[in-house]
Image (cartoon, rainbow, N blue to C red; front, side):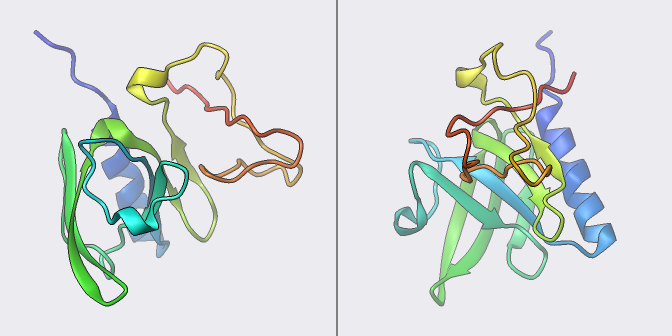
Length: 140
């Protein structure tokens, strides 16, 4: 029997924690051929999306895909994101959340979080002045 990934369960848990705490949940996504997002908002192969109740309509946080519709520049768009492409989920207001190792980019050298000068974890797509390489914390 195939082992179930913990990733979709952790995404749902952080989403619920954000919602219960009054925070805005955001996800960072590495865009690939299976990812359906507005290309004009993709930067360096990544996109960060607000998945709060107010922004993401008909949100489904499934085990394989995340589906919802959202407005971009006033135009409603259907979004489909493979769970494997999710790099992290975090609260906009506090930057607390989880960063994930992408399935096809696992690297043992990425064993701890990069905290930058502020002492807070660097969000996906943000670079520390001292380091351009992102590092993820592996949670087992």
